[in-house]
Length: 164
Image (cartoon, rainbow, N blue to C red; front, side, top):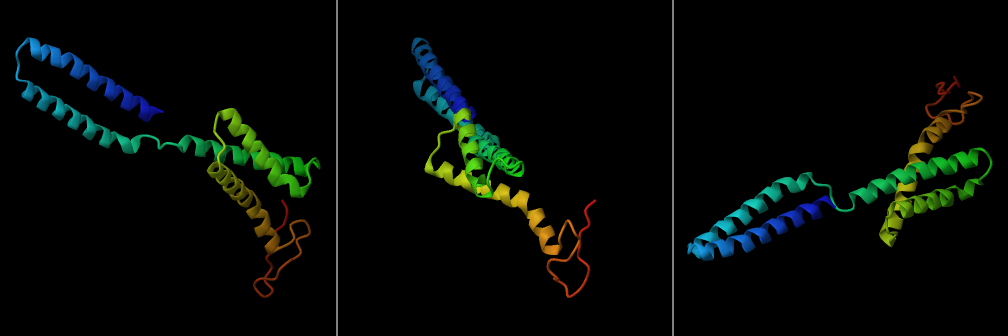
């Protein structure tokens, strides 16, 4: 949106220069070739300024991606909380999170396309991995509640985790 506004402002400035400069030059019998060269130089300078500023402008679609990632995080947490209180079966968590993300994005005005759906699924899977990884890692080391080793990964060392 910001890039579009900057481009429109530059276009408006160029139109203003051409519409005001040409009649002024015609009235004052100025050299039109020299004036066109100055306008061309001004446009070149403007393009250089835009090339300098462009890397600092947000990329198109970056806002939608941030919304997807944010909604996926909340959707996964929401589905997990519903599962923990017994309102949602374990195998329905992904669908609940996905539904939450779709609703959030619809409210935010993001158009749901097949590419957006792929991003949603990826963001949900990444969030599940991020949330679930510590528990999987702890279970591999030992039983969290009893402290008994579930897997003896290093040949007998005590790898248990005590709950505190």
